[in-house]
Image 1 (cartoon, rainbow over the protein chains, first blue to last red):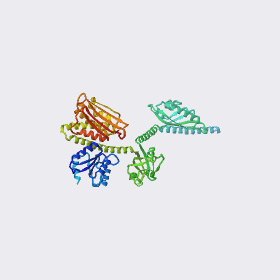
Image 2 (cartoon, rainbow over the protein chains, first blue to last red):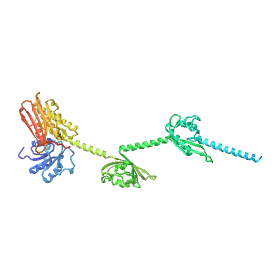
Image 3 (cartoon, helix red, strand yellow):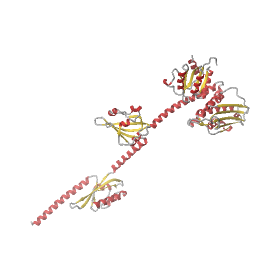
Image 4 (tube, rainbow over the protein chains, first blue to last red):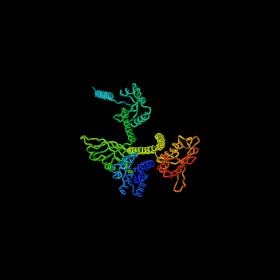
Length: 121
Length: 468
């Protein structure tokens, strides 16, 4: 991890998947904040002003799913890039927050890390 | 010639004329009764039958004279005889038209239904002189009528069993009539007919375009099959109906009536929706499993040689598969702690004991615990209590209802009688899985102690209460 390691938030309710991808992304050089639901993700975003990207599952427990979380992030933190993932079908255009990217499950850590690098300025 | 002689001669001539007339009448009667397909018979005023036309003998196979008097009773079905005799006796007393139904035995022994009728013949002075009777074979008609009744009953039963109602629409009048099931289907009380507009208003707004309308009924272009939702008249419940119709046309070819069937297909529609939901759910679940397998593989393959990784991965997938078996058996609702522990430790049944109350886990916790137990068992088999003959493992769990902050679940793994333990030199998948994943999935904390006399692992978490 370098001094310029970029900060991202990963939201996934399956702990095994969350910790695995978080560790993989850390190894790829990112600073990763883990969240298992939308509420935890928003807490991270409110505390840290340097978060540059949100990587979230669409199916999340609780009242806010990944699509609604993305919409909130798009409105409150418009500079944050958004990548959404799901085991289900890709949502149609209206279901996706503007400017966000979709990656289907299961994803590979290498290509995901490269995609995230590519999105950050 | 005297006056007397002349009168006598005149009388004789008139008698001769009368006799000739009588003979002609008699001949006509015989010719007629020979020609008709019916049985014809005559009876004396006292009810003793004295003549039968050839049809009777042909039918019954009786010899001449055999049916005379009360002999006819011999070809009447025994079960019908009492009623026939009673009716005949009453007719004789009243001297009035007689009609009765009975079965008559044919020459081959087969009984066929007949209707017998008899009329009394009176002379000029009003004295009953004779009865003339006929028997008409109604067996075929009765059979047809019965077949028709049966056919109608069968149709009704079939419609009832299939939940089908029949309908008929008078296009010009704009009215509809239907079987009892039809009214029931729409949640209305049965009546003879009702205006179509009443039914059209019950079709839900979204499906209004699917039903027939005045225009396409009048020109006969209404679709023969349609499916739409209605709001039932009584309960307001939304139901799916399917109707199939055909047109009856007048002489000019103009549609006059529509007739057909209508069926409640709500259950089928619900099953279709369930099927679709299940397909999506299955797809989601498969993707999730693949994601889990992918994460396990990724973690397993890191920092290890390929041979160890191959074995470890196979073990981990087996533990995952075991947990899936339990969950599939439970229709993915829940699994008990005991089931998960027992199934995962089945290879070490002789060296393991487990005790605890009945605690249900949701699928996520069950999978997580299965994977954690597998890691502990694999480690114990390599380095711990399960690597030696006298070693054993105790798995205990309990729910502490008195704990501050709500009921608490404590689950522990303790190894006894194994070789001396030294802490692992690096953090492997097992530690990752137990300390981070298991703790997170249960929303609690995990402590692993590498005590010299045996590994101990304790999970402390809020009591798992799966969504039911």
